[in-house]
Amino acid sequence: MLSIHDIVAETGACKELSYLRVYERLFEPLRDKPLALLELGVKEARSVRAWEAYFPNARIAGLDRKLPKCSLSERVRLFEGDQADINLLARAAAEVAPNGFDIIIDDCAHVGSAAKASFWYLFDNHLNPGGCDEKDKRNCSNSSGSSSAVRSAYIASSSPRQRLVIVCGQGASLLWPLPQSS
Image (cartoon, rainbow, N blue to C red; front, side, top):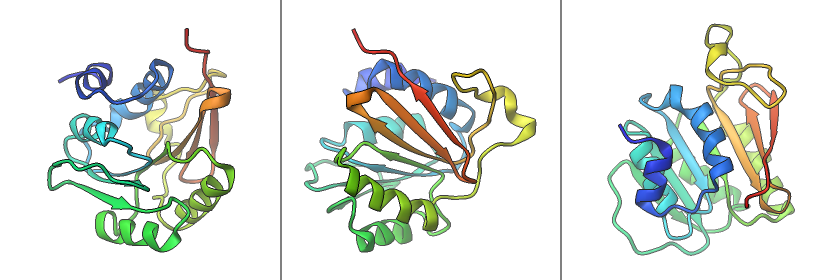
């Protein structure tokens, strides 16, 4: 089974190494589970292809203002529109994850108002409850050394500050400061 690093290299997805390290820690224990994943901001769909390869049993939704012309498996659906469009987000959830998303990755507009609108709507309505589970504490740890297994996560990248914000389904938030890329 290929690592997330190998899959990203193979698909040409634009994911920084510092993010991949965090993704690997969070997602490796979930890799073979039947998840529902939403990525806001798919650009050329390379990252969607990466998630499709990395999570072989997941249903995946991708959203962007302008969709690429590409062929994807039946497990993947792309939606065209603005990340702050609550009706579009509701439609994506209804069609791909009627029971809620397990993972939501916001790598979209990087505009505060749009990110805020989609975050609160998705967190309140379409992110599965999850968070920390005592028996799985060995799986993930944050930068302060405390551990938590993530069962569902809303991940928002903040390129200018190089931070990755991870909010678990039950409200615990983890903030990983990421080293500057060289």
